[in-house]
Every structure is written in C-alpha cells, then in structure tokens.
Image 1 (cartoon, rainbow, N blue to C red):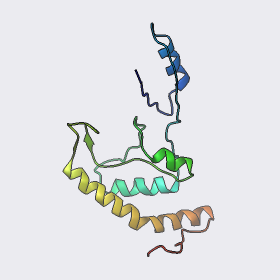
Image 2 (image 1 turned 60 degrees about the vertical axis):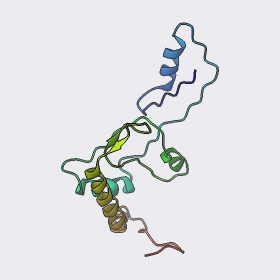
Image 3 (image 1 turned 180 degrees about the vertical axis):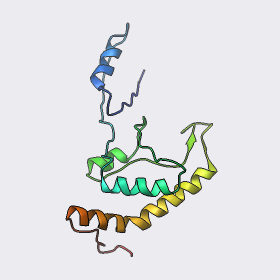
Image 4 (image 1 turned 120 degrees about the vertical axis):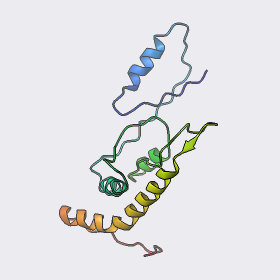
Length: 142
C-alpha cells in the first residue's frame, strides 16, 4: 500500500512517521519527504496579491495552510515567491469536482487588479525600503 501524507508547516513529519511505525503489522519500505510550501506573508508580492484579492471580496482575504501539492514548491525552491489561490470549488480531481461561477468572476478581477497594480505597489515598497524599483526586462511588453 502506498500512503501519501501531506503535512503543514506546523506539523512535525517525524511524529507522523512515528505514529505510523507504531501501528501493528506495518512495515515501512521507503519514505519520501518534501517540505511544505511556505512563503512569508510579509513578502511584497504576497502583500500586493492580498490587497488585490481584498478588492473583490466582502471581507478579509485569508491566508491558510492547505494540504495538497502544486508547482508552488518548485517555484519556491528556485527562489520565486509563490502562493496558491483560486476560485471557490470542491471535489478536486474527482467526478464531483465543481467551481462557483461567481467566484470565477472575483478571481479574474483579483488577477487583473494584481497585475495592473503590481508595478506601483513594488515601486512604493522599494521607496520605503530604499531598493531599486521594478523594471522591465528585454523582451517584455509594457
């Protein structure tokens, strides 16, 4: 039997493994471990995204830990801040998967607000922190 346990940053993988080893008639043949995806809420890009998302919500944009896997881990390992967010839905990857049509509109608005507001947001943060502002790179479109 293969078991895939996806743990959160506040969980200790050694404790989870110890619990499994404590089960009767269990033999562990091989383990694989990858650290959970984590990016600071203070990151400039995360703060800009949170502000953009907040414009399309009736309440606070929440930051939570989630189980699952995504490409965010690969981006984080390469030094690129990454978070997961998207429309409201459920039943992921199954026959009853669904998404809220209303939340798709809010998601699209949040993405648009993030992309259009990011240069000004980063320039303001750079001025506060005394860093060089965001600049275009060769091949980029304005």
